[in-house]
Image (cartoon, rainbow, N blue to C red; front, top):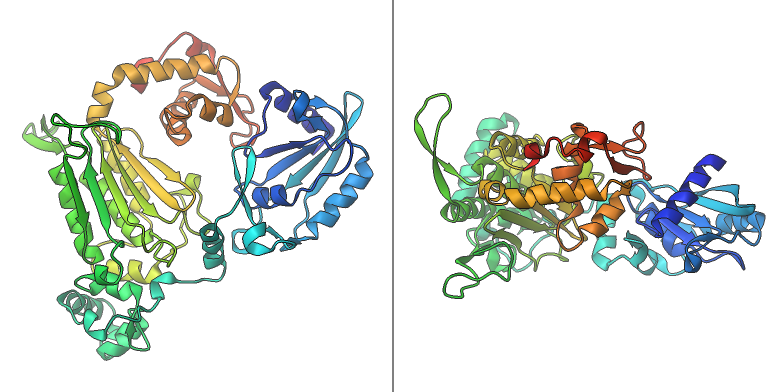
Amino acid sequence: MISDEVLELVSKIQKEQCESNYIEVKAAKNGCPKLYDTFSSFSNQNGGGIIVLGLDEEHKFSVCGVYDAQDIQKKIAEMSLQMEPVIHPVCSTALVEEQTVVVVEVPEIEQFRKPWFYKGTGRLKGSFVRVGDSDRRMTEYEVYSLEAFKLNIQDELRTVERSKPEDLQTIAFERFLVELKSKKQQLSSLNVNRIRELQGFVCDGIPTVAGLLLFADYPQEYFPQLSILAVRVPGQDMSSTGAVGERFTDNTRIEGNISSMLDDAMAFVRKNSKISTVIHPITGKREDRSEYPMIAIREVILNALVHRDYSSFTQNSPITICMFSDRIEIENPGGLYGRMTLDQLGKMTADTRNPRIANALEILNKTENRYSGIPTILSAMEEYGLPKPVFEDGRGCFKVTLYNGDSSNMQTDASEDISQRVLEFCVRPRSRNELENYFKGELTIAYVMQKYITPFIENGLLNYTIPDKPKSKFQKYVTSVKGKNGSGFSNYK
């Protein structure tokens, strides 16, 4: 990092008066602080992070300078050698207000090498993740998730000791066998037991998690929570109640194998969706239209079933479907797997957590298994004239939120108000972190970015402060002249 960039970074911190997901500040005027936790959290997150030494957080991030820049760089190098695996942060120095400031750039480690941890406390206690402006110790499950990808641990192939070979002698498996032999001629001459072994449905004659979930009549005999909990709420949040005080207007647990759970979940959504009559723009005929495009709903539910985590850590956590008056939320245990990030969804080939399940459902014509699910969801919502889906990757869970047509119509005034608030707030350049704090408890930052910031940028209501680097860590958004005039609000209701 060159001197001008250091000056810009220090100015940014002092203006915002805060640290962030990507910036950690230490005074270091009396010695070099221990940085193991921050090293770990930055290297384990997308994009890495930056540590600034020589600013005093307790005194409004004033420049205090470091005690000895040369010694600090030596100790940084020594500390990095105490981390596993070995990577090397990059140190830069600059004079700011005639004081020496040291900037340490911590790169993101490759996904297959994560987590980066402090050897002194071990992988489990020495692995951290960045949450806001703090370093949080990873949970045992978070560490396991990274290890599972790195070591290619396939939890769908876990054997279920209490199960029996007869559990797979079902009509569902017979149908699969017919489809398999018609599509894969090279397997048609093999006996049934050999096919089950090759496809990962049994191991040494014992049914696996994949085999039971795909073909057993009732897999919940062994895994009661590998199911779907579906509820219909009479309002926009869980505290809402109906006319006679009921919390849910529909509440059911959906069980069975994956195919039957998919069908029953779709039936639940159809039953609880509002239907309106519209005139087809081409044929002129009246048609019934559900509040959500069912092809998008199907893809979201199917993705949840195929890509959820089936490890022992999550086998007691069901998939959930929550239908509210303005949206539907579908959440599954297990965050994004492998190298995939939120901004890459639908744009690149994903690592597959459960390839045997995915392949079997492709043979059964339940899925194309060509990574077309996310593009299908996006396209269907756009054709319906609905907001883009909101994807959220939490600590051990993945959630998709689809907003319905009633939300767009009934909440026009609210949408206009939020548009106005965004543009007024951004009269002064604002970072993603500032926007997140501004709407905290009201809207997720993912929704704000997709619903307002990105469209406003595209249509000239907002401008980037660093236009040549849209994805810069230091990017901010500022209201344009067009935005200050209020032009274009009606396009974003």
